Length: 363
Ligand SMILES: [Zn+2]
Ligand SMILES: [Zn+2]
Image 1 (cartoon, rainbow, N blue to C red):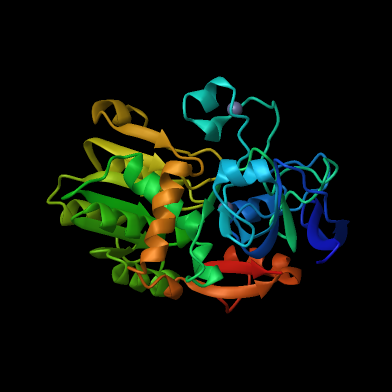
Image 2: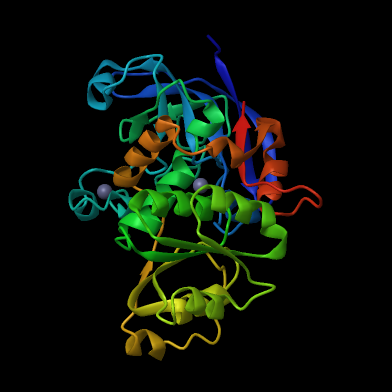
C-alpha cells in the first residue's frame, strides 16, 4: 500500500498546486478512502475563483467516490460497510448534536462553529486529506456515506451529486407530483438532473430553458423526459411558458442558472398563482428589478436550495444503479487530477471550442 497521497491544493484564488501528504493512521472510528473519481460542479468554480475566502490552503473536491481501503471496527459497524466497498461520500461532516442536526436538518449544522465539509477543510487540520482532489481521502468519524454498486462505471456513479440535487430541488422541496408542470431554468448538469427527477415524479410537462449554444444539452433534456425546450435567445421564456400552460403558469419553477440574475425575475413571472419557485443557481450579485410585490399578489412560495441531504442522495444512488436513464450521455469528460484547473474552467464554459456537461477527475 502507498504511504503518501498526491493531492491538488488550493493556496489562494486561482492558485492550485500539487503536494504530497503522508497517509494517516486509522483508528477504530475512522477510515481511509482510495479515491476513484471526484465530480466537479459550479461550486468548484466559485471556490477556485476565490468566492470563499481561504484562511489556509485546502484540498478541494466535495463530490468524492472511492473504495474503502482501511476501516476501523467501530466505523464499520456504524456505516454498515467493509473494506473494499465502494462508497459515495456526502460533502458535510455534521456534528450530530446541535439543534439543526437533531431536527434532521444536518445540512445546516452549526455545532462545530466552522465550515466542516470535505473539500473546504484546511490542510493544517490533521490529517490534511480533507478533499477529493487526491489519491486518498481521510474519512472522519462524522462522515455520512452511501454504499454504491460497483457494477456502475465510476464516472456515472459519481453523479449521485447532481442527481441528488435534482431530486431534492425539483421534487422533494417543491413537492412535485403526477400531472405537474415544472420549468427548469438552465440546462447544465443540475438542470438535466432536475429533468430526470421531475420525470420520475410523474410531472406531465417539463419545460427547460437554455441559450442557443446549449442545443446539445436541450436535446439531452428531451431524451431525459423534457416535453418542451425553450431557446431564450429566440423566444421570450415567460411568454412561451404562458402559452404552453394556457396562460396559467407553471406549478413550480426551478432556477439552476448560475450568474444570471434575470432568471429570478422570469421565475416569478412564469410561476402560477400560489406556485413554488426554487432558487438554487448562485448569482454572485443582487437581482435588480425584482418586483417583490408580485410574490405577495400571486402568493408565491420562494425557497432557497443549498445542497443535498441523505433523503435525496439515497434515491439518487438507487436511480443510478437502476440504469433507467442513459446517464453516460451527460458525462462528457474524465480528466486526470493534474488537469483539475482545466476541468474547472471547462465546466464553467471558459475553454473556447469545447463544451462540458459532467466532468470527473480521476487520480
Ligand atoms: Zn458540487
Ligand atoms: Zn450539528
